[in-house]
Amino acid sequence: MINYNEPMLKDGALEGKNIIVTGGGSGLGKTMTRYFLQLGAKVVITSRNLEKLQKTAQELSGETGGEVLALRCDVRHYDEVEQMLHEAIKKLGKINGLVNNAAGNFISPTERLSAHAFDTIIDIVLKGSKNATLALGKYWIKEQIKPSTILNIVTTYAWTGSAYVVPSATAKAGVLAMTRSLAVEWAKYGIRSNAIAPGPFPTKGAWDRLLPGELKEKFDPAKKIPLKRVGEHQELANLAAYLMSEYAAYINGEVITIDGGEWLYGAGEFNQLEKIPAEMWDMLEQMIKNRKK
Image 1 (cartoon, rainbow, N blue to C red):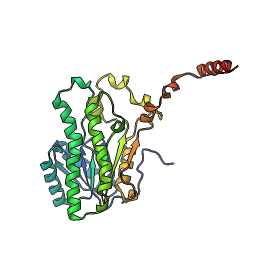
Image 2: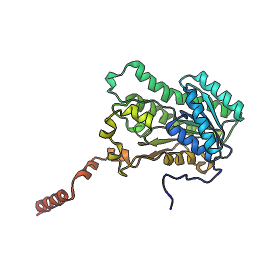
Image 3: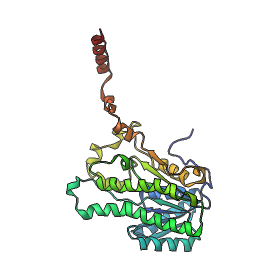
Image 4: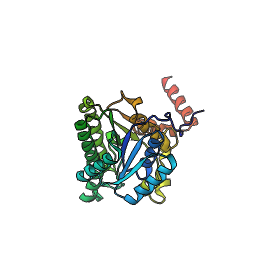
């Protein structure tokens, strides 16, 4: 019986793909990179922490036998992105995939934020995704490298907005708009552009920063997910690998939500009524019948 936390695609599904994963040294970026390697891709992982990248590259290379290239890059700076791309091309010959995964976030009332704090998130998420996308897009178009694929990691509040994470919501909304816009504009060059909107996929580093101490228990995300669990990293890796593969060659401009029904639960006007016990429903039903009589 197939289990949701098992690898999905057949061996070699990403053979011939050379993919850059920003923020690839840890968390979901590392999980996606591992699976891409298992499927035959060569992967460049980037972030600002070269030591962490090199450690991850060594670990994943030993684990999968795949080729991982660790390159330091601060995606907030276009010149660093161009230099990273130049190094990647020199080592791997060509690049035909990009996963914009680098992100930053923190929970705070917006009025408590400094302009610098707000800018930091915008610069990493929106400007960083723009920098990598523009550099890769120019390269693909000039060198006529196709098919090529962009995958952006956004959030469900990219289209709903969310209080207390306003810089992130603002930035992710911009990335979402870029995803859909370029899906149309760059399709003629053989470039597909899609996004994934994950719900809670806990990673130790990110969740410790967002919900420190007892807050993790108090605001347990599983409690507001209809499936009553958080996501397994392999589930997201399966979806990412599919969208990066040629199995998804006709999917362009799509944003796929993978959150166990979380955002729909929050959006429904009467969804909270699930907390009403069965005996109370019996009483309500009887009251309605009495009124009709």
